[in-house]
Structures are given as structure tokens and as C-alpha cells.
Image (cartoon, rainbow, N blue to C red; front, side, top):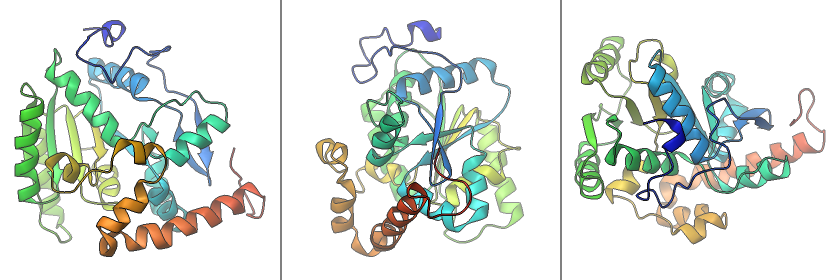
Length: 281
């Protein structure tokens, strides 16, 4: 099925035909020097479809949100991980707002969760894409498989594996890469937490055979029912962080009470020209 009729299916109510289904890389902007591609789910799907047709190499996506940017501003290594991503997608309302202010027609959220659900819809209806789920816990993966197959009965799951919660040896990493490659998966979804999952994809990008890889973070937990999902109306108001902090205060305190204020300070620092060197463009 070609890119042109990707969006003509009535089984994709949330993925309408976009004004532009160009498969070329979209425009980009920078926020606190961190690159973000001005992409929506629609043209992201078109780009990925082109990658699938070519099947030449592995591509990894960076889901760029406030937490990731705050970490990248403190870690040069992680900044490079995000900079080298094939696509850096705007995951969060602040990036949506800022992209609009920079002149890009960003209408809807394009986080990793929205992208994954759109890909699952395609895989369930007419596209034989296969998926590998790596990370999190065995219990979450088991529930994830059950719920995904209930919602997307034609979804092809090539494999699932939850590595131990400790640094893996080079031999263990190589074995995991081999297991993923042997599965023949087209998509690799990794839930190891940020920044570990992005670094893992970056470190192994030259040896992975799937066409697309992305760090899924807590999406495994949301889709498996392990963690309550914040209502869409709250997410689109930019207030998701408040409810998530109330639901998981111990785990998310550092993210929302330390990294978010750091991001706001650095954003103002760049915007007002207080930061020497490169500014937001």
C-alpha cells in the first residue's frame, strides 16, 4: 500500500489525511539548543512508510520532552544521543506551543504514545508490520500483550523481553540484540526509562536490524493498564505533569520538581540572551 492511500482508510479516525504527506524530513526548530523536528503523526507515518519500503538501515526516534531536554542540557553525551536521532519528535504541549510560535503548523500532540498507537492501527489493518517490545518488567509485558491483542487482534508481536534491572554486560547486550534481530521485527519499542533507553538505542544502532526503534518509557505501563493514563483533556491543557506527580510522587519528584524548573530557567536564559554561545533558533 502506498503512502498516498495511507490515510484513506475509515478505520483510522484519529489519523486523518494531512495536508502534506511528504516523506522528506520535516522542518526543525531548537529549544535550548536541542533539536526538535516539526512533525505531526500524519507525516511521521509517511516518513516511516518510506523507511519500511527502503529497509536499508535502522532508524531511531527521540521523543523530545521537557525531561529529555533538561537531561541533555546537563549531559553532553546525552545531547549527542538526541542530536544524532533520525527524528526528534515533539512530545509535550510546550513543544507544540513553541513550534507554533516558530511558524510551524503543529496542530496535535506527536508524542511516542500517539505515534505507537497510530502504528498499531496500521499494523492491525492491512500492514503486516511486526513489533518487538524490550524492557520494563515481565508482568507489564504480559499485560501489555493481552491488552494490545484485545485492542488490535491482528497485531503481530515478534517478541518481548524484560532484561534485569542492572547494568548489562557486553555479552548480555549482544545476546539481546541478536534475539531482537532474529525475531525479524520491523519496529523495536524500548522501555528502559530516560535516558537509558535512548542511549541503548544509540549505542546499538549499528547492529540492530529493525527498521524503526523508539524509546517508549512509561507508554508500556499506560497501554498495559499498569499505570492510570491521564485524560486527554488534561494532557492537551499541558497539565499532565500535575496528575502524574500526584499519582507517582516518589518516582516522579525529581523529574517534575527539579528538572522542570531547571528547564524553565534554561529556556529563559536562552531566550533572553543570558546564555553565552548558541541561542534558540
